Image: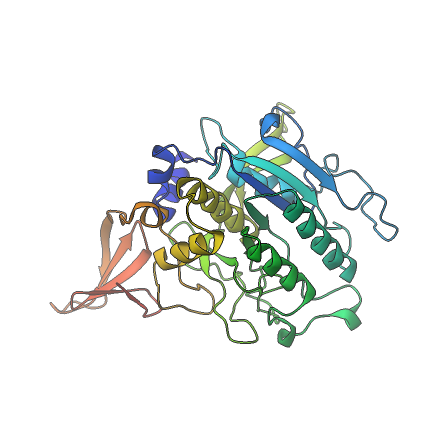
Length: 365
């Protein structure tokens, strides 16, 4: 677990931010999600940092998810997302452990309907009215229980109602991070909405070595914009699972590992919050741009990796991580063979002729 945390620090290079004291103090993050099982438990999270919570499913006539947002052991997705930012103990520290949080439930755990999109829009409007600094959304919509209401790829153009609602927050100087989705291996392998929105940060998933997770959904948007903007650690990444019960001790809750752009997204949102704290003179759009420009492939990009892994140390103070490399092989035995390295910043890289490339052939500057 500690080794994984060290790898995360290295991959996103956010140690300079935290060591300088920028851990989210005085900033507010809205987490819009499904259930937040045990997020109101002081043994899980410091309750003085959860400054508000809103359950938009309560009183809804068509919802099947009638258990309140803190009490359903099956519905802990929001808690797991929150843990990547807020959880901290001797084994793991989230990316924004000192920030304040507002929890908003809009997702019906038991069904997939257009009503959830409408509730998400109301949740976004609520977050806007509360004056938050950053919003993280690990929800996305493509296909529904009623197939007649399905979206098509052509709808992923940033012009839909949810994408426009997200864009409206960006216009109000709120930085929004949205999960790309986990459909990379499916027949629908594209992004979901509202990840198609303009002026936000849509986040894909990589493993701890920086290699793309096959499940991470692909861009670009239907109108040709780069998506995702960046990727984070979403393959076998650390989360807090509040529902797990130890069979020997009966203790509930454990740090464990899980997969998904749902978890890479709040990691990036937490660090974006720390960056906003560190650079208060910059707008949300300016913070977004320096995060993108810090990424490992920028200005090049791919449909699944976007601009790559952001370097938050570089975004903060212009200093790139001092890359640590280990030679693990070569393409052949000739003196001019390309050498294959395991890099702490970029994962597996190939060096040839004084230049460095990703396994996909993208040049790393």
